[in-house]
Image 1: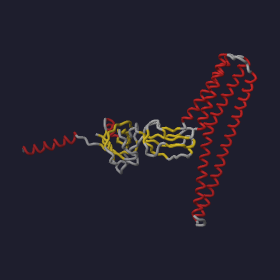
Image 2: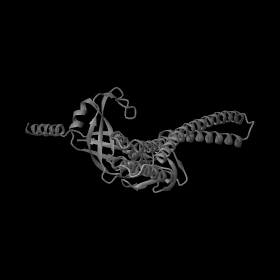
Image 3: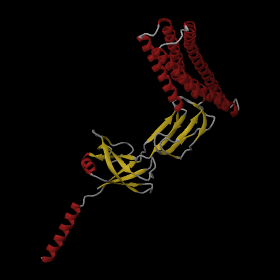
Image 4: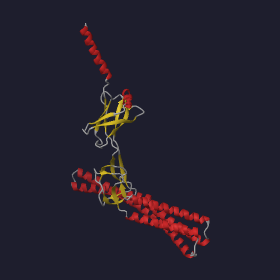
Length: 367
């Protein structure tokens, strides 16, 4: 009788201990790293590259350098026009020693003519850029038609394979020319022409203000106009300076170059991606917990994250979670869980040495 009681007590103790030790919840996830795509607002010819795929970079490190000769000239011109506007304002505020009205009138007329010519030239260059796009589009249409014809003939064995390859190459070249023509038109319309027109307008305003001052004497409104011309010249100089800085593409943050394929001599269009940088920010993963496990996952202060690729074991914490339920995603569902409703949970993984690789899988354990 005593033996039976002792055996029963032992069984009860085992059951109680098992009930007190809750099983560890395990979830699968895929590592996702933070990345940024860098490029330039101006575009141009690559003159130097400072990195390669896999290189580590610091924030502010140069990645690609573009030919900045034209941009430097534009900046120098903007500074000269600003100096001219400033000198005019100083002259208006302090008066003039001698009146050179005729010379000022001629300068004003020449500046106005230059501005009108700049506007007309801008329109003509826009038309030329659109015409280049139309020509490139026509070439693409012709090349695609030739390629389809050659492909049909190659399929029937009427022509050699080399003819089909030449037609394909011609089609690809036509598509590349069309892409380049479109990028050139965007850069011309959104960056180059506005700056040139604004510069010519600022010059014309400054020359006209100078002539009116010499003709009528300095008046408050004339000084106000001169101040406005100086502000316009300041804005043009700031724009030119910003465009010049865009000739050097730098890393906005520390990280590793994940994608890069540029060489000296390559043409980089405006707003075209130049490189992709995987940052050194802690990576994250998404796990999917059922509604009965969600409270337990949210309450966990520290999660244990084990790399399935053998890269180590890490700690993690819940950063956010879905506010509404969803069906189990296809890439995690099993035959038993297809109908379960789950909540997506974003887990931030502490990886101080940056060893986790994007796309590898991990097992997240919730105590």
